[in-house]
Length: 241
Figure 1: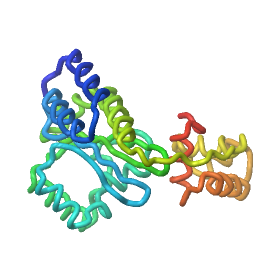
Figure 2: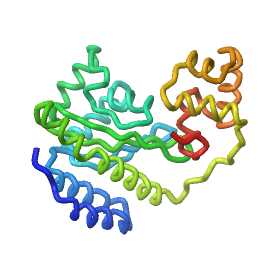
Figure 3: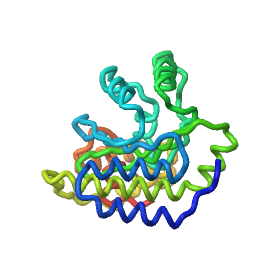
Figure 4: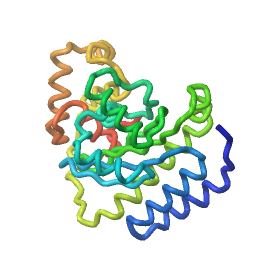
């Protein structure tokens, strides 16, 4: 893959910042795809209620098929990234089940490449979004691309999400509840990838006591599970990693 000039990126991000309506995001993402010389770029938002919104360069036929087949349920990119807080190469996700293999074959028939990289983004009120880059090339070329432009992808992902949230005027912020220092410590270590046993050992507490802290934090954050609690804490700046 060929290197790209960075000066043009500043101009594209400025255009994104000045976008005045959702349709402007589509034009920007097409320009970004061309700028990085990749097959596809996609911004995909999934709200806390399961509603989907996005813009990108996938074939509209594939987008419609994705929705009709309810591929959101089995998409390894969605399911895998929802449990992560850091960018992930698609090769690290689980593509082994029969439904997922069929999904992958269907996606490739509709023009998706064999390589992918996604940046998970979390916003207020349970909002979850992904910014993904997709391309057809060998592993060596893809690793070089990610090494060179990983930071760009993270920057673009968060700028897209920030702008998309501006187009949600009815958004309401949840009332913040204070977590105890121990609850913050527990969620921070979980966000860093520690197992529960490792968190308990690090904090010098029993796993039973740890469960109490996590459950208390989950209730305060109105989270459906531990992963959701960690995501909310990170989004609100309570946990910093």
